[in-house]
Image: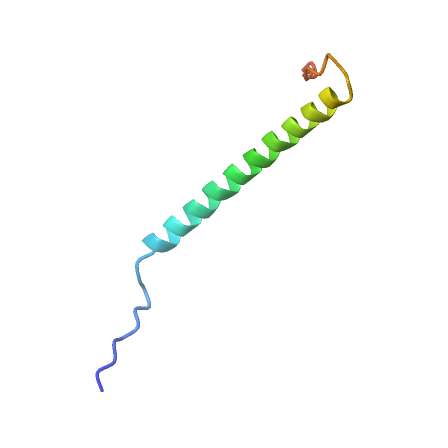
Length: 60
């Protein structure tokens, strides 16, 4: 019978595109987690009745 041959050296473009999408999703997920953590800390501070909840950046 006529069976299609398997391509051993196929195009890597779909694999690279998938890897790029995975990296973008990872970066967006980490950024979102950081932003949600910061917002949660701010809400906790405000709900405890404090009025000065500004983030103080450490001096370099």
